[in-house]
Length: 398
Image (cartoon, rainbow, N blue to C red; front, top):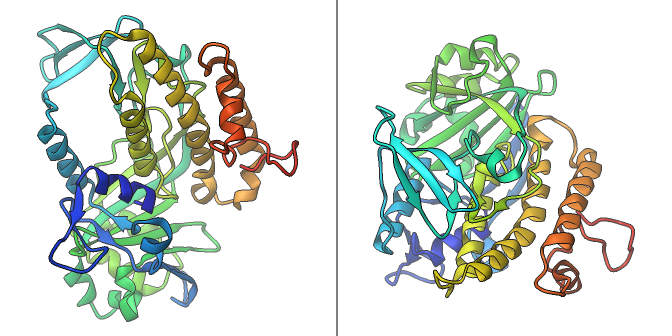
C-alpha cells in the first residue's frame, strides 16, 4: 500500500499512533510492514540493478509505503467498520438489482433460497473483478480478457527463508525488508517478493506465460503445485528456485483485465474498487485506489440526510467526476509490467481514456449551470489525470 492509502488507514484508526515511542511510530491493527525500499535484481546473477529508499516517505508523503496480508487487512477493516456501527451480514448473495429504486434481492448463498428484498438510500457495489452487476450500472456488458499470464503466489515463513543457505542469498544486507522484483530478459517472467504480517512471512508472486492447466483459473486461491511454479523459472538463478522450494503450498490464478468503464454511478448505485476498475497487480494500485474510492465517498456524503435524494445524486456525480479520471489512468498504466512495455507505450491510450472521462464529466458532472469540471481544471484538481496543462493547451499531462 503506497503512502496515500496508509494515510487513510491511519485516519480510520486501522493504524494508530504509538504514544510510547517516537514520532511516526504506529500500532497497526492489520500487521502492516513498512518497506525499507525497492530493489530490482538481475534474474540470472542476483546483481542489484536498481534500488531506491523509502526512508523519507514519512516526511515527503506523510506516511510510509507498507505491505499487508490480505486477510489481516480485511479483518482490521471489518473490526473498524463494526465498531463504527456497520452491520456485517454473512451467508447472503445478491441476485437482482434495481439501480434507480435502490433495491436488491438477496438469497442464502448456499441454498439459493429465502429471497429477500432490501431497499437502501445508497448501494455501494464492491463485489470485485467478477461483479455480477457492472452492466446494470454501465448499460453495456464490458467483458474480462485474459492477459496471457498466470500468477503463482505463496506465503513463506521468513525464518525458514532466511535460514536456507541458497534462498537467503536473495536477501543479503537486509534485502528481506524491501520490495524486490526481477524480470528474466528472455522469457519475460516477472517475480516479486515483499514482507508482510509484521515481517513474519514473505509474499512471493511469479507472473509467467499462462500455462494450459491454469487457464481460466480466475479464483485467486486456486491450488497449484511447487513444480508448476518452478517450471516458469527457467534460466533464473538457483536462489530463486530454492526460495520457491521453501514454500509449503502454492496458489495460481489467470491474470485478467477489463477495458475502462464509461461510468461508475447509476441512480442510487455506485461501483468502487475492482468492480469498477480492476487493476493488473503491478503498481500496488488495486487496493489503494479502492481505499481512495471509499474515502472520497466518506468525504462527499458526510452530513447528507436520508430525505435528500437530489443532493445524493449531485454528490455521486461529483464523486464520479473526481474518481473516474484518476482510476482510469491508473488502470491503463497498470498494464505496463504484465504486458511488458515502457509506460510511454501506453501514453496515447491513457490520453484517450482520460479525455473520454473528462468529456463525460464536463457533460454530466456539474451542478445547476456551473461547469464543474472546468472549475476543477482551473483549480488543478484533475490537471494530472488527462486535462490539458497550463503551458500547452493541446498536450495531456497523463
